[in-house]
Length: 257
Ligand code: PEP
Image 1 (cartoon, rainbow, N blue to C red):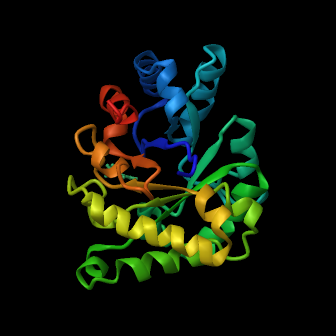
Image 2: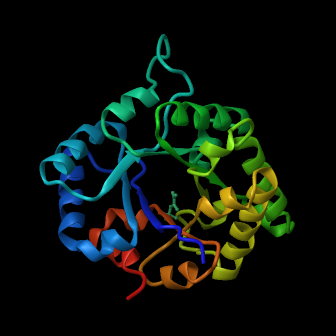
């Protein structure tokens, strides 16, 4: 079996000020053991305004928790009021950056070309993109989830070379399962995650396809993570609501128990 280290990434969305962020990371660090970090990459994705505080805590206590941002600008610098660059995130010790979350696609009209530009901006700063893809309810009802999601994968990876593509993280997040409590079945998750891996083999080669970590996201909790992780092409989870509860997030990281 390919040796892909699972990733459990907590997308805090627009929750927690920097003081609350410190408290949450401390509780998480207290709950996690060395064996957990050996088994999975534990990642938190706080709001921008929390990242400096998280960095200070992680560095001071030498925590193995990794962190990143929920978005970045496609531009390197300049007259882009309100934007945050990849270089700024890298300087704060970020390892990851979420790109193309469904909430940004929906509320900020992010399309495939913009997602692709942001993936390039992330790689230019040695950040690992967590590129989000996935269909809405209408597409699912029409049975078009695989074609829809693969088109997003194709668009997001346009002109990304193999040596970068092999390090990307792709999160399959069916929009109808995000924040709704309606988790996809393990079979639903495997269908699309398996199709994404097969597409990576077509776009690149088998080595790239075997290297990329593909996450499931959508109402993941301690009680449903094991079945999802049992699927061969699911290498972790992008967790929203449950990542704000340190006890629940630790349970998710410990899905093997
Ligand atoms: C998400 O926002 O990426 C997500 C999966 O949210 P939730 O776990 O709350 O459904």
